[in-house]
Image (cartoon, rainbow, N blue to C red; front, side, top):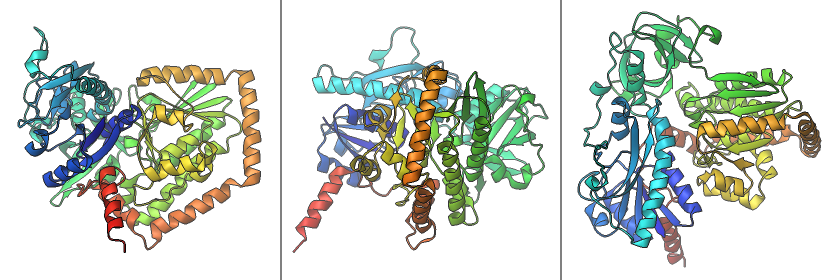
Length: 576
């Protein structure tokens, strides 16, 4: 079918829907719903069989839904209505939740139901639930709804038709306010504090007062050993702060400053608090803590080192790159035969840390230092001739994060992972991380250019089919982790390991003799220097709009194929 995705922005759910439906063989285009008249024009240009809205904040106008079937993906069970569906589900401790496919109508979230899919809730941030349970359920339900629509087998039903006697029924919720999210540090137990921050994670955060400074809180993790006066800051580690509750403590990794001019950048908590956090004790020894938050953890399982790094939103500052490189060097120094690189379950890595760069005194200098630190990390992996390295992608990866993974000897991903192996969306950024060496090892020139120039998301199954990845398995992070552990043990078998390590050394020596890695790096950094310091300021402009979440004024042409064709025909029309 011809399917138009109508979206607020091309977020993780929209990208997953795009990649999955493209693999199913549908003809797709994307339209950003920025203005009713523009949306009407986009619908007319593409002439879709059906419109799918994976992520919208505004109503679809009557002029569209009265003429076209519009399927809305709502992150709630049948009967649930309102813009804070998942927020309320977390705060109210729902044990089951779901995704409903509604037909657009005059009433927001009030349309007839095509189908729905449920899932068990887990104690996790809203952003994590959204990227896993909600996204998976949305894809399953949407495929079912599209099949029903294509077959004309059944018309949608009012929400009440889906309720069994005694089942949990959704209801209309008002938008959740900061008053609903407010934390009382003298009363709220750790579980309540976690739920409130989890229900606001990603956006909008929990407004709070820390050391006399008004901030928004993000990224909460339980700490069960450290104690202090409720509400007091009692320690810091790797940019996060630990804050005492009435029955324990929580780590808060990120904050945004609140001021008269609006919000500041979302940054590591210590950077936002400044002097407030200057004298906090540094908690370096994780053995003194029970359940705790750590960005980087190395776990030894016999001949295998599992190196876990969970960077918020997959962003890697120069400090984080250096600490991960140090941890990798420590693993290299052991007698382990295999090192497995595990990123976060939401994001494996998205490359350089654009928020930290934007906040720097010189964003150009910080960009250079960050990319050089990324290159140093990649070089550590590429130059390791003592161990085999496996990149295990349980979460999404983009830009430099994809090429960081390709530095490993093999790359495997969980089913459902989305990759964006390109840089151009960030103001035509050239990119480094030795991609000019790594990508041609897997793809030919035409396929490489198609990926980089197309700027479209790629799901793990499709990435494996073209050779970008070595395999895909497991639907959940738990299934994937167990499968990776078995694979790593097999790789560590002495006979298999000896054969692979010998082949790896031969190939690296051959490649180095042909063109040294230093040459690839120098060429890439020369191009990056132009991005950072040259006359073309598009990288700096794109980064600013990205970190400040500037609303879109139009649909990018690489997504709006219907508009690109119109522009091309218009250009031909004016030629002499």
